[in-house]
Length: 234
Image (cartoon, rainbow, N blue to C red):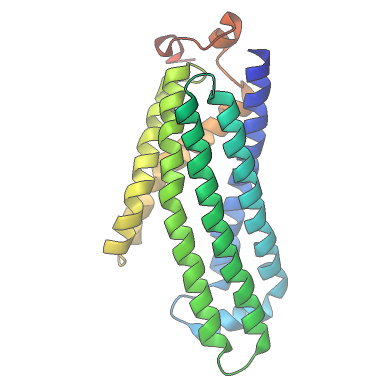
């Protein structure tokens, strides 16, 4: 179980890197550069804030790398509990990485196009950022899918509190539902955001638990995963 605790803390560090880089790029940089339905403003933002745009590319690559690392370490942590479910976390996480990488390709190209400053730059830069946004939105589908087996394994393994597993499963389902909801209700983005709120709560709890405790104290003392009912409040 010492190895499981070490693995859990490494997983937590990788997950923390994913959370920080993801929030930074999606909530701060993207909002500063992308002006939906305004080609001239999007191009002007990219030209005026080249450094921020390049930092955004680096942040996106960091998201890809940290999520890949998190996916692999979650697989290692949960593989003794259920190999197939652990592999599904890794698989869905890596697909999400691929979609974020595609989104990064679009945003990096948008910067190059905007810097040309020709007649077509504005429209092309906006189109590329629209594609960036579409790729990120679709990535949410697989981000939700990776939370579902993660939550199930939390409950099955006894490594973490069982309520955390419920929240992660609910958050994962909410993320999956948010993708079609955003497509069907584009004028009501708050509905899609509300569906992802449980996932945010569960992820913050998961990161904190992995870093602070690694795995359940009872599981560590027993040298094996504890039954889920024993760690419901651990």
